[in-house]
Image 1 (cartoon, rainbow, N blue to C red):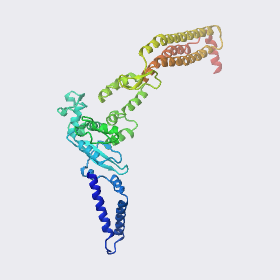
Image 2 (tube, rainbow, N blue to C red):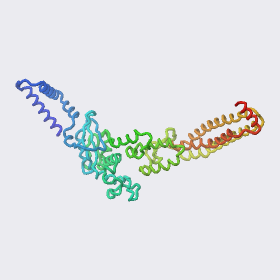
Image 3 (tube, helix red, strand yellow):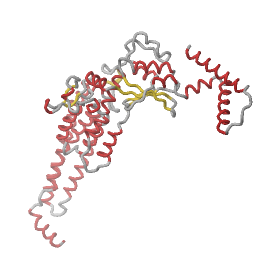
Image 4 (tube, helix red, strand yellow):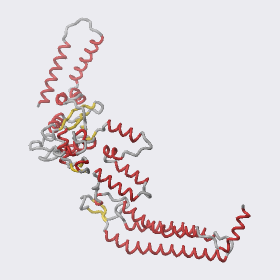
Length: 450
């Protein structure tokens, strides 16, 4: 009713302005700027008179007057919420009232994006709200050395015991502030009487979280945190523009958090073979410091693409997933994989020892071409490794592991067995001394060659 009365009032005012301008008496000559302004004003009134929808379109393109009255400037922003184009002002005002209410007590600044023609909420929170929320979510923070050091769940009462615990701006970094503001946003819930506040897009239930429901139904277009320019400048100076200094893992993890595993992967690749056990110990220390020690359970990880099984509803996630009985895998591993691996290793060892015996016979009976058995041994070992690797992959595929890590670990064990067996034998055969019977002839040949 308020919108309709406003439209009628605006229409009557425009009509009166148009009639008064059309019936005005001649005036003194005006300047070019005044003449152009009058022409544009009269053209606008004529357009609104002939096209009734033009006023509504202009209202959507311009910032709503009522929202401007509720907007306040802000010096800091943690999270931005954008709304789709054409959302009713009543929904924006209701959401603004809810977010600025007694709970969650957020500081919301209304902005209009002229390029996207949509409204946005620039949201932050006071220090007391952030500290209380940090206590609610049990945020781990570092204690001062005189209080024992290590990490402990933050409490407002013991704030002086934590490092940089003088204020929320020093205690919380950019990533933690954004996460806490997001938690406060999601804690805003509908009260009795709010069921029809967002109709027809959404019907709320008492106690339902407002922001996630609005995101799922399209009332909120997107919600994202903003970058901290000071932290980015520090990272750019300490990380991007340096080549021979240690990588700032802690600083990068504090800022991005979600992509810190990329840095871990890089160091795992570089230090895989030589520093494997040392890196495991160091990664556990970092996981404890960064609060990522509790990772997702294997049942929640997505299966590898080549995993096969019967489709059924998972009891953990409730989604249809491929299932494969563990007893089938154990049966294949113990009854097929182990015997085949033992047979392959036995054949490999037998063939290698046979060729070594033939090499000894060749060097004692045949004087010339003593390198022939060693060449055959090298060719045999290469063929054995190629054939065995194919057999190991086939056996590993038949065992049908669900996770990629388990699949790769079992494949590495299978292939490493033949390498452990064959490599010392090949090294012993190649580096074996020349028999005494051939030593003088070899010495003579060496002298003649020189």
